[in-house]
Length: 101
Image (cartoon, one colour):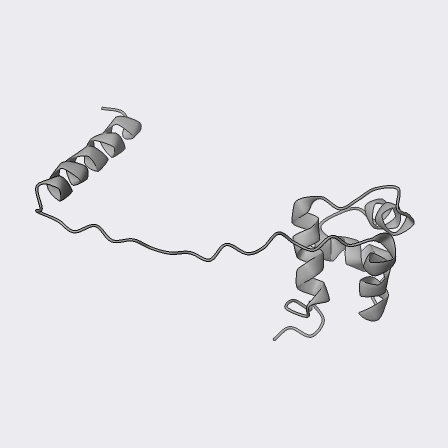
C-alpha cells in the first residue's frame, strides 16, 4: 500500500467513525495575517537607514543580493511578497538582528 493510499484510508475510516457517532471531530482555528504592506523605494530606504544598516547588511538579513536592495531603493524593481513580509517585520521592530530579544 502506498503512503497516500494509507492516509486516504485512515481519513475515510475516521469519517465513517464520525458518521456512526463513534468519534468526535475537533476544529482548529488559525489566524491568517493580512497581506504585507506595500513599501515604496523611499520607505525601504528609510527602514534601512533608520536601523543604520548598510545595503550589504540589509541584503543579508533579507536573503537577497545588495544589487536587489539597490534596485528596490531606486525603484527599478519591487520586492516580492515574501520580501515585503520581511520588510514589514523589520519595520515594525519585530525582528532586529543586532538587538535580538
